[in-house]
Structures are given as C-alpha cells and as structure tokens.
Image (cartoon, rainbow, N blue to C red; front, side, top):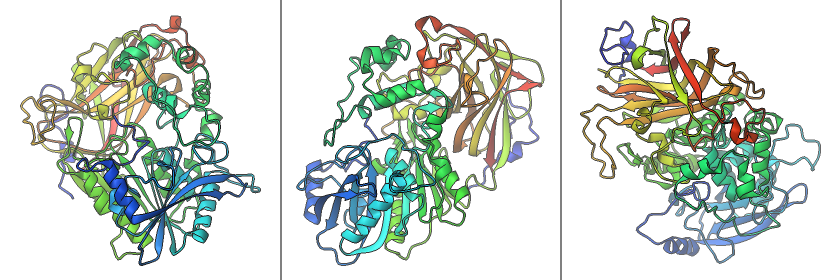
Amino acid sequence: MPRFVAGFVMASAIAAALLLLPGCADRPHLQAHTPAASQPAADHARLVAERFDKREVRIPMRDGVKLFTTIFIPKNATRPLPILLKRTPYGCRPYGDAKFPDFLGPSPLFNDRDYAFVYQDVRGRFMSEGIFENMRPHIDHKRDSRDIDESTDTYDTIDWLLKNVKNNNGRVGMHGISYPGFYCSAGMIDSHPALVASSPQAPVADWWFDDFFHNGAFFLVHAFNFMAIFDQPRRGPTTERGEDFKHGTPDGYAFFLNMGPLKNSNSRYFHNRMTFWNEMLDHPAYDPFWQARNILPHLRNIRCAVMTVGGWYDAEDLYGTFMTYRSIEKQNPGIANTLVIGPWAHGGWARSPGERLGNAFFGDKTGDFYRREIELRFFERLLRQADDADLPEAYVFETGANRWRKFDAWPPRQAQSLSMYLDDRGALRDAQPAGAAFDEFISDPARPVPFTEEIRTEMTKEYMTDDQRFASRRADVLTYQTAPLTADLTLAGPLDADLWVSTSASDADWVVKLIDVYPDGAKDDHDAARTRPLAGAQMMIRSEVLRGRYRNRPDAPEPMTPDEPTRIHIKLQDVLHTFRPGHRVMIQIQSTWFPLVDRNPQKYVPNIFMADEADFQPATHRVYHEPARASRIECAVLR
C-alpha cells in the first residue's frame, strides 16, 4: 500500500489505516421543485385545482399584525388531515382563489395524499402586513405581546390553523429550503405542542458564515445578484417580486472586475436603494449586527422530530445545514434528530433526479430516492403515525463510491484521525516535512483567479464539482498531491486546514480546495450527459476561504504583519468521499477566487468594503512546509 507522496511511492507505516471496508441556472430560493418536463406546468396546476379547494386568509398575530396565508384542502378527504406548513419570504404565488401552483408540499409525491397544505408570507413580505427584517433576531425572554419574532409568528399561526382548519388531526409539520429553512428552524424554538415534525433544508443559520460571508470573505456574485432582487424596497402589500438585475453582459468576471472597488456598487448600480446591502457594507466584521442574526444559539426547547437536509455541493448553506443539526443535537438531548446529506446542489434534492451535477455522476437518481424513501416517509410516519421504521441518526451519501450510508452518529464514531502534510515539490504526505521550505506566489487583485471556466453572471451550482485544471495551471495557485492510491481512501467528517502562511502585504485571503484527481487513463462512465472526459480530471470535492484579517477573531479584524509567518485555521466543512485506487488526493491553495469572492485589496483598510482603487496592490504570499511550521490538512478516515 502506498505512502502519501507526490510523484513516487514509498512504504508507509500507517497506510493500513487508510483502507475502506465496504458498508453500506435556476433560482433555487424561488422554486423548490420543477415538475416533470413531459407535462406542461398548466396541466400540473389543473390537477391540483381538481383535487384541492383553495382559501386565502389573513391570520392575526399576537401584536395585531396579519399574515397572508394560503390554505389548500383536499376535496374528498376521508380521514382527519395533518397540516403541512411552509413560511416563506419568496411569496405564496400564484395569488388569487382561482389560481393554483404546479404541486403542493415538499414534492409532487404529496399531491395524492390527504394533507392540509398551508403557505404563508412572512411578516413584511409580499401580501403580509408588518415590517420585514432579514434573519429577524430571536428574543429569548419575551416580556409581552410586543416581543415578536419568527418563533412567535409560527406559534400563533399553528394555533389559528388548529382552530380554523376543519377536520385536522391535531398534528402539524413544517418544511422549507434555504431562507424558508431558517423559518423552519425559528419555528421549532419553544415548539407549539401540535408541531410534531419539522424539516429545515439547507437552512440559513448565520449569514456571516453562510451565504454571504465565508470566514469574512464576501461571496460577491451571490450576494450582489440575490440582493439586487430581494432587497428592493416594498411600499406596501404586493403580489409582485422585484425585477431581475441586468448586467449588460454574460461575462460576470468582466462585469465585477469593471465595477472596481465594492463601494462602486451604489454609485453605479444600486444608488443606496438597497437597505440590507448597505448594512452589509457597513458591517464587514462579525459584529453585534451579525451576531444577533445567528439563530444557532437559540435552537432550544425543541420538542418535535427534526430532519435537517442538505447537499454536499450546496454553494450557499452547507455551513447552515451541519451547524443546525449539531446545535439541535447539543441543545435538545433526547429528541429525534436526523441529518440527511446527498450529492446535491442547493435545493437539488427537491427538484432534480439527482444522478449528476456538472461533470460529476452519482450512479443513481438520488433525488428521487430521497423524496420517496426518506422525506415522504418522515412526514407520513410522524403526521399520520404510520407504521414505518425510524430514520437513522445520519443518512449520508458517500460520493466517489456512490452509495448511501447509515450511521448512528455524525461524524461517524469509527472514523480515525489523519493528517496530510504539504511538502516539497508539490507533495502531499502522511508524515511531517523534514526540511525547511516554503512555496510562494504573487497574488494580483487586477488579475484574480476565476472560480469557474464558465462565462456566467451568477454563482454556478456546478462550480463545487468543477474540473480544477484551469486553476492548477496558473502560477498563483499552489498544488500538492499524493501518489496514486492503491486502495480506497474514505474521508469522513470535518475537514480542517492548519496552515502556516505569510504575505508581503497587510491582508490576504486564503482559499483551500480538496480535489479528487482521476488517473490519466480513466475511462468515462456510462453517463451520457458528460461534457468532458474523466481522464486526468481534477474534480473539486470541498473548498473554503478565510479572510486573513479575521484569522484570530471574526469580530476583531487585524492586519497581518508583512512577511511574518502566521498560523491560520480554515474549516472546510464536512465530507464523505472515497478516493478510488489509482486516484490522487490533491490540495490547491490560492488567494483570489473571483468573482465568487470579492477582491481583497491586500492593503489593510479598516472597512475593507470602502477600499479605493489605489489600495489594491499585488503581494507575495508564502505557504510554509517545514518541521517548525508544518502546514497540513486535518481529517478522518473510515476503514
């Protein structure tokens, strides 16, 4: 069995620990599922209209504000109805008593089940009264009816539904993806007694670590495009959403580079009309503004069963998925708390077959399997008390091996720790480096590394599986890899980068990618949709970024000392991936990732978003790999 080494194979004393024994462009926020292409959407809506009666109501909250709510009741129900609720900031379209959506519930599989389906515009959005607040802060200790938050609005809604939906069975479930996933999380706090099942899916948990800021690095293309629509001012209840932003070019790299410093977004495009965009620019650090919008510490007093769902390739809320599951597990001992992770992009489990993403192929229709065998059975068992087996603690898809795994804990209890060290001549080894050395590159904000080869104006959902050869061929991207493996290597659980770095400037971003390198002789699988050959592919498995000024504390930015070796830690979230024999494990390190991440001027400016053009400067960055400063990747392996 080989030792981790780039280029040539050596014997390894710990290699036995690396064996695996077999075990078991659309806008995802706005629509959670696309019906089968074989039937027009109008036909789906007609079928829903034939089966359900629709009622639009306004439900009063404890402070008198009324929330617009749509209720669908099956016409010929023969048994008491469970209630399935979704609260959303994206609108309960289509509005009007005579207009019907393409399907009801989390997926079309629910259409022929007897449920009362309920949709609600959250406070201050679309047709609901009140003032909207992004990620409305939770109030732990409420004094009177004026202390409202999303947990009280959920409680009051459920209470009203129980009294006003005829023939209900007294059991309520909630579901929602992304921002609606946040409303699921908030609605579970101090749960209403009738709430028995909730499934926050890709839930936003803390926007400074989720969608928009990743360890302080600003996800520019995603935040800009999202807020350009979502943050448009509302002048009263409305059924209309904001207009799409027109970039004037299909080339997002060129558009955002030509925009210049981020502060130009207002002078050129938004003209100070976007309130939350301006608040983001005023709060680049994890200060009290963002801390108050972190729902995780408040996920207590949850009494319902929870199924948190996410995708390995969720470019938006992977952090929120894992942290929501972990926070509920820690703060609510004894409840049924399940984690489901599949090989999906953001929301892909709800609207796609799930057999591929970009150039990655997963061997089966994982989305279909999830909707039929996991999601439907979760709600049926809890809302109807159906005679069905409980879900495991963790139901997780293993990429690379392309199979579902069941675990009684996440991370798996049997996983064993492993360190992979960066070494000389681009090696990645399982032993510490022996000699003093470093690698360096020049990072130029005027010529940043692109995050994808695609010519697009949005954050592509496929970028998380993209072939990284376009990046590894650049001089400002460092590459380290193992020798070809002679046996399966399965990484499971959290993945952390522990690096020693320096910069000739006073600030820098640090991007780390985990990559599965296919053999040069790899044959294409039977995926007919593959757009490029697998031979030699560098398929990205996981990636993350840290803004150097936040290396010690996210709430207290500080400049880096030029040319001083500094230790940094970057959490790359979790992984369950098998590297096959003949494949290599690769780590790439770079400093720009554009326009996914905004450009760091590399000159420390107290508010980085207010940097001027003159502040942007090239800098020399170093990554050290020597005994006293050993840069490594910390992970765990399954045998």
